[in-house]
Image (cartoon, rainbow, N blue to C red; front, side, top):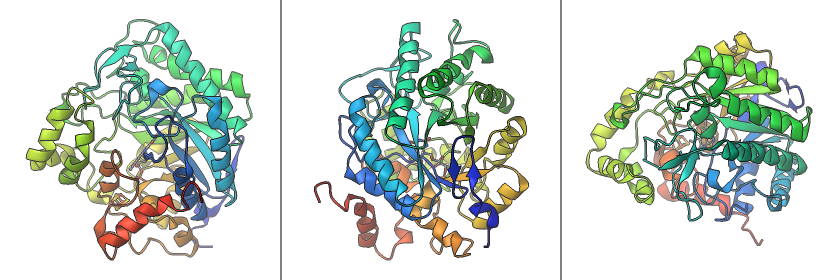
Length: 440
Ligand SMILES: Cc1cc2nc3c(=O)[nH]c(=O)nc-3n(C[C@H](O)[C@H](O)[C@H](O)COP(=O)(O)O)c2cc1C
Ligand code: SF4
């Protein structure tokens, strides 16, 4: 078969995938306000299982109500959610696809807090610099509570028959808020040195191992480079953790019992480098960002910027983003660094949609597998395209990031009209996630 490297099974310590392509995490507001899941999410995930992905790594699944980004994401904070995840897992398994749940806590980085908790938790008391969400510095009791929420989340995922869990340790959410030298300003045993900043995540890993045993797949998504100072307008200060520091964290994670590393980038989300786009869709962003105006102290300022000065916003963002021709595989150098330091498999995210590029990365030993988000949103059957020997889909993802800026208000899907014969066809494809309906 062409692109042999892609279609070799991938052996983790406790899990085997049929190929080297994982659907990367993509969150969308499909579920119910109270964190219970619904049929739309099952329909959504099944699209990628049917399309041939070896595994699906779920959306951001909060382990605690205070750790959600927006309402309407399915959660894993209570045993009552286990039957839903079991049903979802079974639907995905029917297509010989594995399902890995991303255990997550937003910390201070949220979009729409919802009515239960108006302030978030963090390693620091400083608000999130992008939208200006206020937060509370966590006490050691609160740290212990969240560590145990992660362990309970893993236990519930296992009881639901899922194939593993991923810690969302990347992109500025709570675990990053502890790991990052640019965010964590504590002077107790959870702050200061790298060893202290890593204490929180290592406690989570040990608590999960104690709760679910050693034979359940556990991986961690991490931002190897943080580029915390990417946007001057946000006044973001220092650049954050170096690659050397992140690689050391990966070594500790492996020693503590993590089975794979998922390489990402950026100390906040979204970030000009994640998901890296060809151009910030500022006008489209202004149409949905109004949802957030009352959420954070800086959100109204940002809204005015996107509305009134889209060219300025675009320049700030685009100057910090990779060149269009470098988007595919932009994180491979970081994956290579991690791979040289650990003996567990390394998964790389970032722009992949050309079979020969993926096959070469695996052959060179840069990574063991890739994860794909937007190109799979654009072409749910991308893996089938590769299976047929085609190097690139006929209508590739343009990296326009319109899916991303719509997600806070509208259903997740591809919003690039240029990829569809008509706007109606685009809307029909987006709305297909509601078919079959919940009470069919
Ligand atoms: C709409 C959207 C939602 C995302 N949600 C998540 C998420 O919940 N958790 C996460 O770790 N990454 C999330 N990401 C990042 C992707 O998983 C992926 O790592 C990133 O987009 C780069 O891959 P790509 O170039 O294949 O899109 C999201 C990306 C997009 C576009
Ligand atoms: S809207 Fe479509 S084409 Fe644009 S980045 Fe998202 S998936 Fe790709």
